[in-house]
Length: 124
Image (tube, rainbow, N blue to C red; front, side):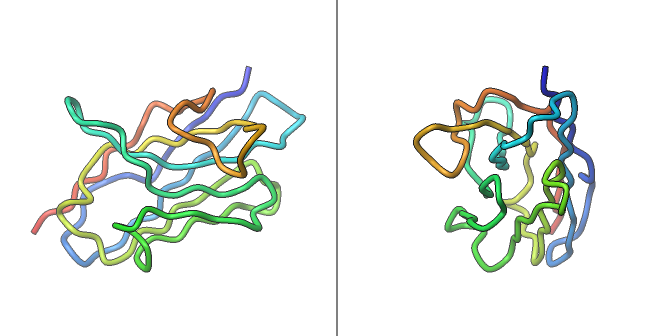
């Protein structure tokens, strides 16, 4: 069973930076596309960024383009989300997901595997 574990959340002032990490374990076959979503209780889950299995393709929400960067380690089991120029509206719980989508390079909101989430708080 694949396990997804996020780390790196925290509190920062507006304009600051944070880097989130997401590590996969428990499946040696690999081949997972990965992504980040964010959600607060009572709110809809929002897509943030995603990266293909090879790392050659990425996608971003319009609200984070130019500020966030997603990348994956050479072993392809760890993905990073570098978040710069953070804004108070970026405050959320960030969830990492992984899947092997048959019809896309990226996982969607219905991805099969999810982490527990990591809190990001941006103060003004």
